[in-house]
Length: 445
Ligand code: NDP
Ligand code: 2IT
Image (cartoon, rainbow, N blue to C red; front, side, top):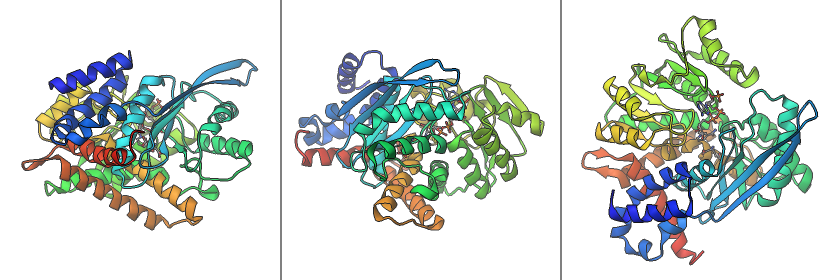
């Protein structure tokens, strides 16, 4: 490791003990940025990298609520307000039992660079709780969301901090959270994105992360004069991002063949077509069942406890969670002929896996670039809320598509190495420059 990165990481590890996901995310960025900073001493002198890795504010709070049997439950809530230099804090809320400070700080840190790449005026934040929505009734989820917002409301606002969904937070949860905010503040304003259409939401926001991730893959493939037509694609997860990744892959003539959840994966060599996707959406979004049922319904393979990376494919779309591709899985993908990985999830590839992709010179689009379509469309939802207007499906989709093309161009601008593009360096440097320059403009903040 570069000596400067090593010294910098020593400080990070000392100040943030035990936060391994946060260390991982910061180190990846530091490795990309350090050579750039060394060539541009103004950033070094102002200690921008050190400042950018320190959250502006961390909020942690108690969430007491009562379950259906009358028992008191206590969860922990968080909001990491990481950086507001180029706009209000913006980023999702995650409800998952694994949620802790390290995971939310890594996500908030990534969000700063991602939001900068979108071209829209959004700072970075992330929040959530160790609450597990699985197996809870709608009433329990509602009471939890109300208690969560009973504290969060004082820290957010349309010009301060605008949360949205992430793992475990979809339309249902955003509805309960919005209702509670409106009641406490007596104010109808765009304090969350991912709202339903009839109370301030935007068309295409549910689709945006998956669609954007496929648009990004399309741009990467164009650099090698390739299209998605006929490409066999592995997809992990089966939630919001995975579902709309599959939908867009089908629209572009590719063939998605896998999906997964935390219990296992299904492999459907004939392809997960629109009809089967409709079944998945009903299974996951309405019945909230397990992906195993897909295998039973369509008579295909189900592998308990497995992830899909051993299945032969041309392109891979990790869309479940962090660190879901390790080094040997990355090798397997490359050995099987996979030439493109576009990350719908945040930090799904372990550092060793990323090295495998980069060394093999395949097209590797890191999450902060490839999945930025979700937050970008949240930005479009905020614009529509401010204008008190709603744009058509076509208009939002076209804006999303153009933003993904522009993110791709920024990655090429900053990541070109000879005749290949290092999208990791490209995304990190492009995301950094905009925020760093704004921090220089605004003085010691
Ligand atoms: P959902 O909650 O809709 O779906 C998550 C999916 O991933 C589920 O299938 C879930 O399985 C699986 N999963 C979650 N945690 C794990 C785990 N620890 N191990 C194995 N499988 C797991 O979330 P999203 O689709 O919204 O989010 C997926 C990823 O995309 C996350 O990394 C998120 O940060 C990222 N992302 C989301 C955006 C958005 O707009 N929603 C925007 C940008 C990135 P199970 O049901 O069994 O838990
Ligand atoms: O990781 C992400 O970019 C999100 N979960 C979406 C954030 C948002 O504000 O739409």
